[in-house]
Image (cartoon, rainbow, N blue to C red):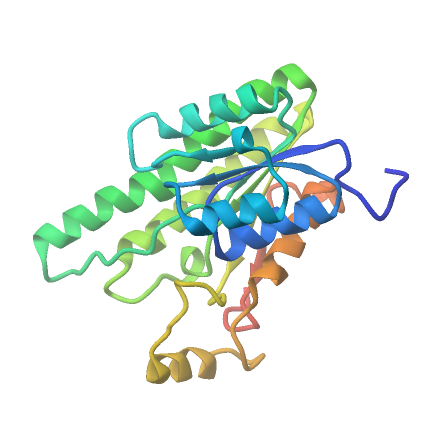
Length: 253
């Protein structure tokens, strides 16, 4: 694009889980680079209202949808297209980090069911619906936010979370391989600990987490957001299908 200060100018981006953390920072980064942004949250909240007002996003482009509900992903894309008839990119950021303890059968089943619904089924459905639109419009971009856990696993309380992020990595690779010839590109970003609600808040747990990171700190949300915006702006189209690790060298592949 000719305007290097606004590499996303003229593009519309749907960002899920945009009320806080990586999603909020991604919405901010995309707007700063010229994009029109449709933001999503699981429900109305003060945080969701604040990011809409901060970025001057129309109310119609701020969509609340519970991604644990059947069909939520398709409904979200339909609502986004109703609000902004052209959709150029999707950032599947929304997710849950729920325990699925090995020693508790009831909690295990509940944790797996909800985690798979939000972290796998919903982003897969969003991607599927977006692809249908991209095929009509001449192409599009998908960035899926996965996790370091999708590669190396997680603690014994979070098997479902690790498995869900591994599934997202496989989904991304499949989409990239299947659709690259149609100008539909897909990337995965796999953060380690990021300064969000999911990061360890307890002092002792924080010390343990940081000790495992050679960089000496957890990542900031805007670090992940800047990478996402770079990918959406076609900074390197040949990287379609790739996974980008953002973990301070705590897990090096």
